[in-house]
Amino acid sequence: MNAHEIVSRFARRIPNPRKGGAVEWRGARSYDSSSSGFGGDGFVGARIYCESNTLYSYGPHFALAHYLGERDSKSFFLKNGDQGQL
Image (cartoon, rainbow, N blue to C red; front, side):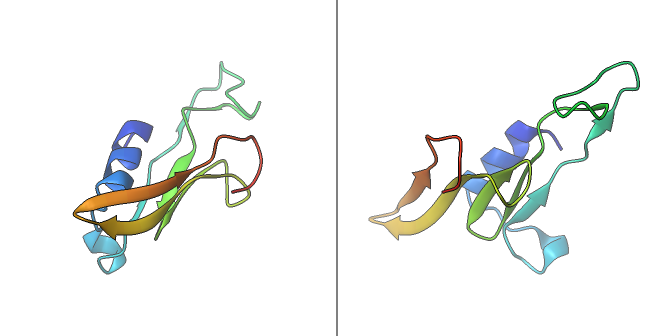
C-alpha cells in the first residue's frame, strides 16, 4: 500500500478488518540498495502510517494529522503545519 492509499483510508476513516476494525494502516516500505532513501538507510518511499485517530510520518514523534470527529456529517482534522510535534 502506498502513502496516498494510507492517507486516503485515514481521511475516509476506513477500518482495517485485520486490526479488529480499527483505523490502522501501514504500507510496506520498499528497499533499493542503490539508493540512500530519505533516511539514508536504503528504504525509499514515504513512511506514513495511521493508528486510530492520528496519521504519522517517520514514527510517533511526527504526527501529520489528528482526527477530531464529525459534525454535520463532515469530518474534522487538525493538520500539522510545523516540522515538530502536533
